[in-house]
Image: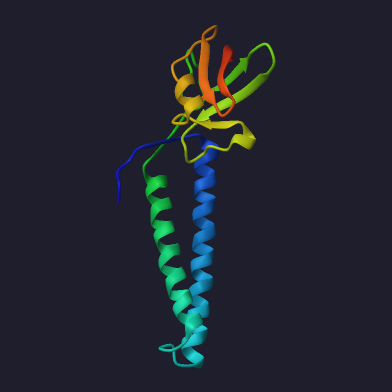
Length: 152
């Protein structure tokens, strides 16, 4: 298992823990179904049993990966940010639009919630910027420019 260090917000870590619990519950159900099948009939030719075995392997691997993330996560503390970095919220605006975004690890990214991965084109162009800086990044519609209005 990789020893990658993850920087997540408290909310992001809680979401990962919740996902792990979901998979643990699913594993319990799978193993119960497998036990019921093995008690009632032969498993060697049972397609449902083999499908459950495959799913069990995948669920166990997912649990292992989530446990690794949880074990190797450093929670980003809320503090005053002087430049754009993981965990901060950034107000951007240009002559047409205004956005409030939060820079996060790719595991937490969700554009519908305004959570942008630091490794995305936008997140990468924002990292290290300060209030008053202009940020420019490529979108499907072409080059876009915004001013950093505030960082929290």
